[in-house]
Length: 69
Image 1 (cartoon, rainbow, N blue to C red):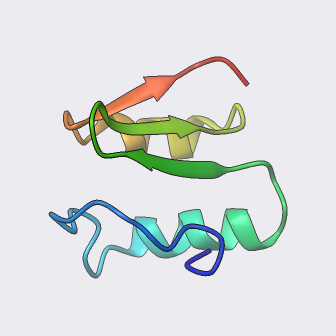
Image 2 (image 1 turned 90 degrees about the vertical axis):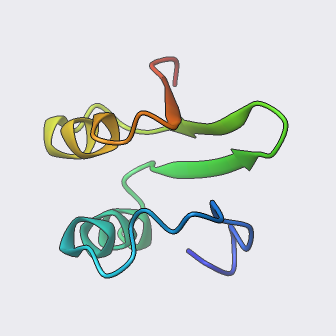
């Protein structure tokens, strides 16, 4: 994940979170998760329709969730 997305949010809101490891595992298994950071407009996240992942991403108000795949 870090190789494909070297620039992650500076506030490290995910630091040490088990949920972040879960997201990394989803990405490694190729389930369609993609995280991109737009420094001007905040983080834009595209993800598969995974209810657990969606709930986790909604926990952080600094992220805009893009429902379009």
